[in-house]
Image (cartoon, rainbow, N blue to C red; front, side, top):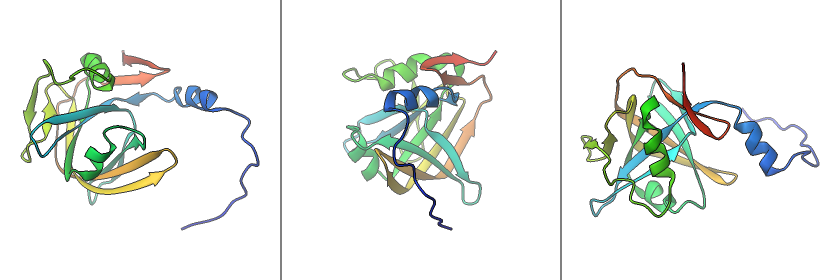
Length: 167
């Protein structure tokens, strides 16, 4: 279904205002991980994670088109979405910081396809890199979940530019 509606001639807000408004929506925090052909690991922090479909099991996340890791995640067949628990803000910060090795002192195990799964995550989803959709300044990645596990625990949340937890 596609419908056309009139668009506003001008937006009465700037990018900063838009970002602050979006920051009022509390989200969970994930680290997306993958393994390169040479055996090294890559990962990044993302709060843009959502379910798409139960059958087939599909999830989505998005990545800025200017991200250094765009070619890695576009080209790899699999990745893992790690949903961080309340005590893992340090991992969210590590995987969001440029110029450091976020894998140093990070505990993980390997999935059936050799992708890193972060220990202590409240859930993880091993995904086949099903499709990608460029929209605006991001690419939306849709992953088909091939395996997932969870360990119920309080979530790490992101709201107003700050990490926090419930309760």
